[in-house]
Amino acid sequence: MFNFKNVIFFCLISLFSIQNFYAQEGWSPIKTGDRDDFITVFFTDSKRGFVAGDNGHFIFTTDGGNSWQKQFVYTEENINEIYFRNSKDGHVVAGRKLFITDDGGKSWKEEIIFNQTDFKNGTPEFLSVRFADKNRGIIVGSVLSKNERVIDSLVMRTDDGGKTWSRIIVPSKIELYHLDFANSSRGWIVGDSGLILITDNGGLTWQIQNSRTKKALYNIDFRDSNNGFAVGADGTILRTENSGEIWEIVKTNFPNTFLRVDFASDKEGWIVGHKGTILRSSDKGKTWIKQESRTEKSLYGLFMTKKYGFAVGANGTILKYER
Image (cartoon, rainbow, N blue to C red; front, top):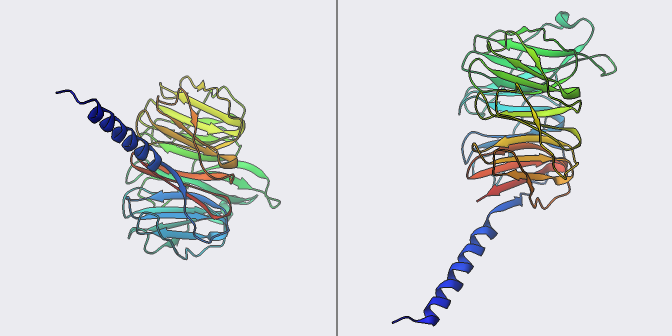
């Protein structure tokens, strides 16, 4: 016999379960007591992760971000990026220094990859590092004058897994901020004034793509050799479905500068930036919705997976995302 009261009870229980599920999904702050700005974050698995930033500040977690410990990485320069090519082999770039680990980040050592005589008129600054495969790697940044003015772009390349590095000359002298590879051959670099460079030979040579913007581009993320995204100053979001032959400008109502973009799947992506801005897309970056970040601090670093993620930023800010 049909029981109306049982149906109402079942609906209320279902509604409560749905509300509870979504209440658990979202961003929550993690307090560490740190006050330095955090710039970069990387996790090698759901438990082990690393966060670093200004003045050589470097911390790690082994319990998924619930607790953090300090680690010394032999530098007081600002750490601009942490990158692991697998669970053991990692790289850190800080100023003109490169640090590597082969034990999953338990210990780090500095690698000298240039001679100062190679830069007679300035000093290199490394901002981003990526490996296309186990042998081919690229570091990008700029060459600074004595008064810290950018006087040239910088691309360093290795084809022996990092044992030796050589400088690659590219068709631009402006500052290069970030790079990403889709495979062992094809990669992209973004920089100031809307610059996008592409390589099809593992970084040996680079060509300029038309980004259709003059805004600084701070971060780039490619899901595969065709689909990619770039973000930058004054709310700039770019997307491509054809390797950057055409870059589409995605218009939103969010004017804040964006500093990181990371797609956890082909459809679902995230952007972070100034004033605690977090955006989310579920349609391959065609549209973006603002998320509740619970902070007004600028967010500089982002690492996302399908099940969890982390954003880091000013004054020791760490946010954790859980479904």
